[in-house]
Image (cartoon, rainbow, N blue to C red; front, side, top):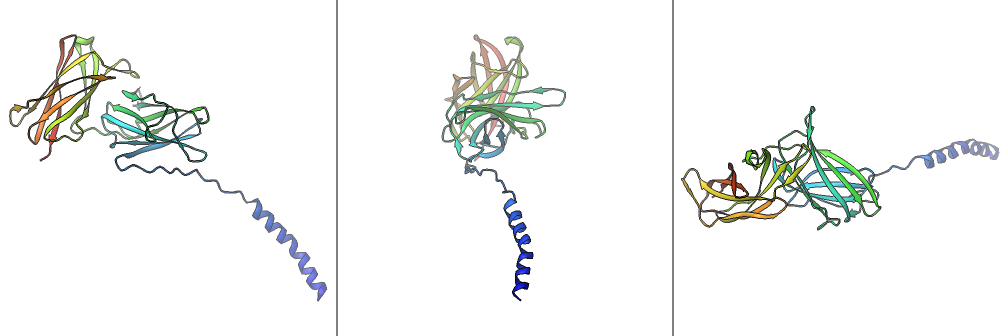
Length: 282
């Protein structure tokens, strides 16, 4: 009986050893580091991408779904190895529209800050036309100050037409036939009474370059087409910085309003037929 037990034990050893070896040799599963960022209540997640070469991941948010006109962009950056949030680095966004036979960019505002504000790097993109997610891309470059590495990434997104229109393009004959882009910024939530008014102007220099216009003068004329009247106490927008012009507009009652813009350069009227429409809810 003792010999039989010994024989069974010896015959079982290879199986036990093999099982242990196989169990230990099983490769350990890898996991993508988890980020702790959640979408803020006042923002919409637009997409995300790894920044190849910089060991970073970008998560991109906006104040609304992408649409033609002015779009504020907020980007959270994370260390792709441990998931920690990155607060320092050189960050840049370049929008790109791919139409197959041709490509073009769009006006963009990159802050140039090397430190995030409240955990986000801020930019703004002015989408000049609507397009599907196969057409519009956001290219992101980042110099990660944590590891001193540089990399790029990109993701695609769909852009819808703003309604009412918040973007206008016009050719200004009196300014060397320049293509001028006018983008509505504020008021984003108009009310009856005095509102902050803001537009931003860009000049198309090429398919890839758009410069802010800092040498125009703007007059605004709000009217209510259905009632045939305007409003008092408006303040014409003046240049603040980088193509942004700010003033005040007064809506005296609810309903549809039209704000006509008169553009001047060197005291010469160069455009007077561009306008934005706003509906004030009761």
